[in-house]
Length: 169
Image 1 (cartoon, one colour):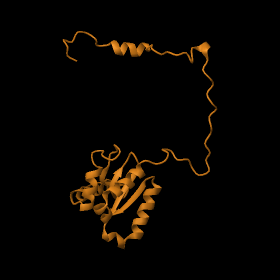
Image 2 (cartoon, rainbow, N blue to C red; image 1 turned 135 degrees about the vertical axis):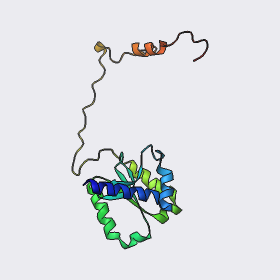
Image 3 (cartoon, rainbow, N blue to C red; image 1 turned 120 degrees about the vertical axis):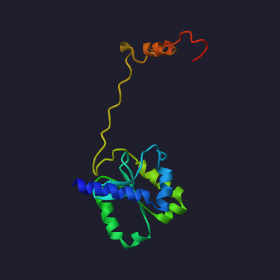
């Protein structure tokens, strides 16, 4: 098993070194947490595959397809299905899309990174409604306005370090 892993590592290193124009252009916009503060990696091994771009926080895979992918549509479809079964979302773009309309590509990536709900419900699941909170109880000190008063912690923090600093802070 380690031999296969090291082979994938060597291959992914070579792919990073020999990147395409489309990969280079997209990488310049994804690197250094430029996209929603998320960390992307390029030419990342996942299982037996090496994906073009990967964000582990979002479980998002981005694949760029050149002209040779027109001949391997079925293989790409199987690869996408296996990655989906492993829990990854896969976005595919043609190299030409990246080179000619990078902003539209980035918009689709940002949309995929922001799902409607962080933990989607399984099909047929119901959301339990909470009972409304009881009104505040004056006997427990709830509902009494504390306007103008600071909590002891806030007061201690605001007074800390108020010594003579010679005008410097």
